[in-house]
Length: 487
Image (cartoon, rainbow, N blue to C red; front, side):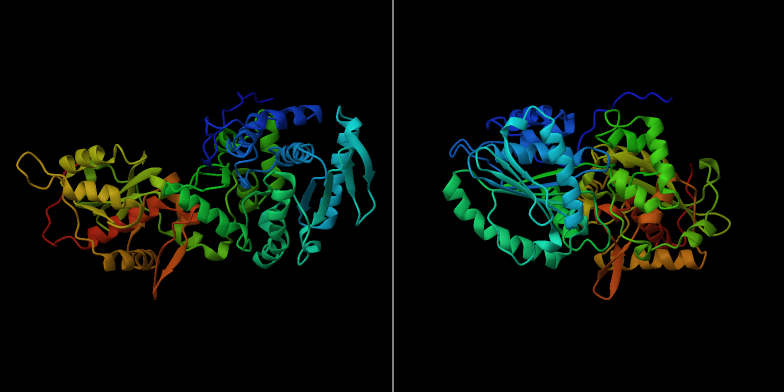
């Protein structure tokens, strides 16, 4: 048996806890313990933040939770404790749990009521109905907890103080709109009637290319948090492996799965992977929480990438070169790739992948002092801040500190197409590199007018591929009489 320490898992994105507000999280934690499922650290984190109380009203601060987390993490058990606590907040409250289908919701509800009846909370129940179509747990305070299927709830207005939409990845946008159109208008009257802010929870693993409701919601929230926007009454918590990292690396999965060490051990994790077999995308989605966008969106053919594998260039044997630089979305990393002259086609080779952007100027200065090669960087998008630093840095004689390639906006648009075209003609090769190989597998296109660029969505963000693209563009646009570089 492989024993691994239980990792201290942090979310990829998380609404910060406001210490100026008290939280109802400890009460939810007590409910979870009474139900026989004490909170794991990640569950308590979510309840503490989402359970913050508005000091001006004495009720919940947040009215919306968007939670995305891997499978085998305990998502449903957290929701059960949260729903139970909401029903106990006051008399005659209406709590709803909606799953993909009525059958899914019914199965979850039967498990929940069995657990409830065996727990310390059993005396709080007045009646349990388990008939299909009318399932309901009624508490002695008159509050009810009901299950339902998302397809069964569309187009119907229903009174509610708490609504949970589970497995939102399977929810089409039109179905979600119909449900929300039926629920949200009732929240104003419920707030006035009960004095407690109604809440809605969207929880799921990441989706697929067909997740027309959940994908845009996640993309919007991540972009807003990257930009430092205030999400208002929405609480956002997003667990998973870092975007662009390797989902086949079990150590990576273990380090970023909030159920690791609590709900399964490392040997079980290996077994989980074996169960997925050749379904690598399904595995990445279930245990890495990485969106499955479908192989049809892959921009670089796998066979082409393998066929264009070139040699690793030793510094002493390198010819002239150009560096390409690209910053990952959110500034989480900086990729530096060199395009190197050889006796045959040029070779793009990863030089460095730095965490963040803070060390990038110094590292690029060291590389340029040593190799006297130009740097090609896009002055727009996530690399704009670093490009601005490089463009405006001067030495002691007020001369530009960095030699930058003259990449114009129009060139940045054509560079990806030129890179792919040269790959297809075997006119450029790439040195083997784990990070570059992985990103070549997830790199996707996004349209810009009649042209296309590399996609920067989280699930397909490929900064090393972008850096390789820029390195090749800079290399092919160097003066023909540029002298060889000395490594």
